[in-house]
Length: 488
Ligand code: ADP
Image 1 (cartoon, helix red, strand yellow):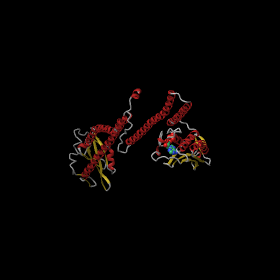
Image 2 (cartoon, protein in one colour; image 1 turned 30 degrees about the horizontal axis):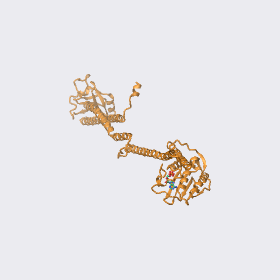
Image 3 (spheres, rainbow, N blue to C red; image 1 turned 90 degrees about the vertical axis):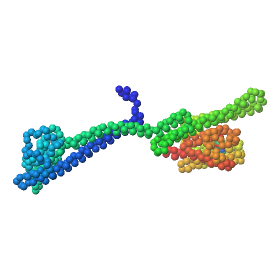
Image 4 (tube, rainbow, N blue to C red; image 1 turned 180 degrees about the vertical axis):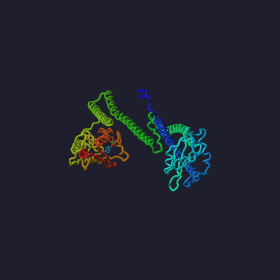
């Protein structure tokens, strides 16, 4: 049995909604029916009470007390056929629905008048006792054959002392019949309302989920591979709209990632093919004809350079691929940025000399940061190499290390060729070269250098920015958190 329940699938949202609505409807109907029934019952009883009070007042107007005896005049006609004493056995043929129900008692509780129908009632003695003590009594009593009657008992007083009691009654058959038929009608109507409610809530469920269905259909088309599609965004500000917007954002992100990935693979293959083609053409040439010793030396030298380029490219690609997969574990050691930069600059002096560029460094104060020394050295080399290589002979490259209260600032500025404004936002992209015609022949240009720099700086919770003017030079500003900030 438990297995069967486990295997049964939970009902869908629409069915759940329908069930909840139906339960709520059923409770509402029950509540409103109870209110309606009790309200009607108390209204009917109240009007019956009023009628009985009126009748007793009319009967009382025909009763007078002269001290010694009580005179009764039948002003309402209710007392016709009434007796002064009750026979032992009431007449069974008398119906309380038709005959008038009146009884008059004196202050000793002795019967003065009783209508034939009244004799069939089982009257509680408290009704008489309470009236003889001067207060009204009203309540439901039964006939001997089980019919319900509303009874009203009122004292007649003279100088505040009761001298007689009038008891009038009215059958409750009509009231009970009206209430019973109302009860039956409500009982009959309730299932129809419930059914209507259930069908209506199911239909509402279908209607409410229509935008979701449209989302699902579009999402299925997107699953089939068309990442240019977007799910329809409903105009109403609700959860479906929020879901559609989130889905669209996600698809947009996926689309961009896939496009970037495709371009990266295409660019990478292209970049890898160039040195391979160069190496192959060199070796083919060497195979075809006999070369002089100098020619062989030149060929091997070129092959070596291309292989070196290939090696650099492959290690750059590997670094970025690892970074993408978030597989890179950064060392976290305290590093003196000023000494690190000075060492990199000292190392680059040879290249600066070769290119006829003046290289200066200003790193006077000790600044400590936390991070991976090898990667930071590589990042500084990449930016500094670019500055030296994109600056013509006679130009100047200045490296500065400064500290703010929270950050270390590394500025590398050159008086080189500069970067055009349209290229500036893209230079950190992979394989992006602002001016392919000016790709440095002597360097290992891959178009990946700045992409790696940006990743390294961001991985150290830092920022990198560039300012440049075409023909005037460029300035790269790197900001890294100082140790005191990181330890907070
Ligand atoms: P590359 O390996 O080609 O230098 P990078 O990612 O290091 O690739 O740089 C991307 C592009 O940014 C370069 O091709 C170059 O056009 C431009 N660039 C970078 N640094 C400078 C600079 N200091 N001056 C002028 N252009 C630069």
